[in-house]
Length: 315
Length: 298
Image (tube, rainbow over the protein chains, first blue to last red):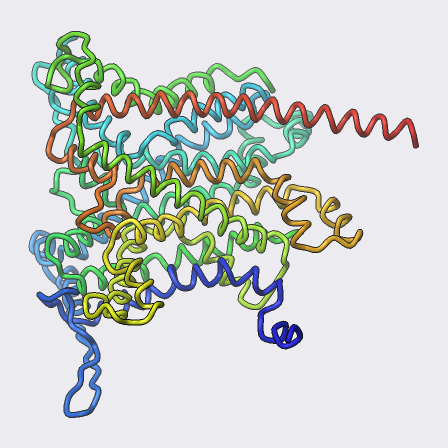
């Protein structure tokens, strides 16, 4: 009996691997197939709000793949390239939303890198006690609720918000500068909230750099900037890639920040998806949007994965 | 190396000002008497009182804490196993996919994860035929109890999947920087691998487990997008309450809520940091003592 059990039950090793593996396959991979499937369905008024793909017709099972959702978007792509800019913007709302999202994610990545790198660098190079305090100071806002931090910016940027009140009070301006509900406030909110995701991987790589390298460079007469560009920057490439991907990939689908800080003039693809899903109840369209987003992001995701693998491998 | 050039100091100052200015403004305006969030009308605690009497919020907060506790606990179990497998098992069939899957939830846009999980749960609901008859088998009754309607269980599964990625990364990196010799020695002495894991590995990485649990707890407590997809009509969480309050413009009490959160978080981070540092120092001293006395007897 025991021998039989041993043959049938997976060994300890594969049993251990199976626990998280099966969880991830079932709750993370399998769902993507449903997205793909439902992106080919038609919206329905029933519950669930999409039609089944398999239909029974005269004892035959017929598969109907409805590709209109993709055609909407591909038609928009054509319009985007053929029409003059003003009309194209009207006719290609999804394309514009993807484009805006990619642009926003790119600039968020760029600015978090420009602000985050010097911060991470300085934290990594300070003494151990200071380092700890500084790192803690970076972590506290990160642990504070993300929604509340987005909300804080509303109070600062509003027409009767902190900045405008201050400037009006000092007599520098005579009427409030409109700042909230603009591309600027969205970008600001994004940079603010994604900053820790850039600082932490950068710090983790920078803190491992060997201080003797810098001393050697200085002894050999290298100027600080030369040392930075010839030694620090190349050696921290891994941290830069990790940080950039940690910011860029999730930023493309961001919903909350544009929804709360954006004015609705500039539409991003995450918000488009949420609208199709929630307000329009068009789950097939939301699924098609997600599939295309995934295809657009597959390059960076695969790149990130390869890179992680390479990092994890023992030398 | 300890002396930072003045330019760097200046940059750090500006950087930290950027990080803290919004938080400080929240705290200051939480004590504002005025209904208008940003017009100062004198010191008052009335928004704290409003907050404490808001039944909707208290219920939402209760649900959020419950889900966060459950998600963090399960995420630590699953994430620890995943991290351990990645750090200690070497290559196996499907290793690359497994490695990719454990980190993917961290970067994948949440709208995609949320939508896809929702569609899985909806498919399960229809597949199990939950609304039909009650007399179906035990398994489908269990399935319907969990997935029959969206709510706590579906949110719990979603948050666990997201959080276990963070735990796996933490555990994995902690295990990689650790010396394997203790585990190897125990194994050589005939200890069963499971016993080695529980008696040696777990205690050694306990610090990573605690931070993983806390991180997961915070992430779950804070998550809006995933929850928006996975929650049903009867389950409103705190982020959902905050989000709709901001949209409706009912805001002064959010300042008070934010201040409470910030104070709790700050005290917590500072205290745990102190504790961790002193534990580390103690361990280092013990190690040193052990090695120096070992040196004498040898």
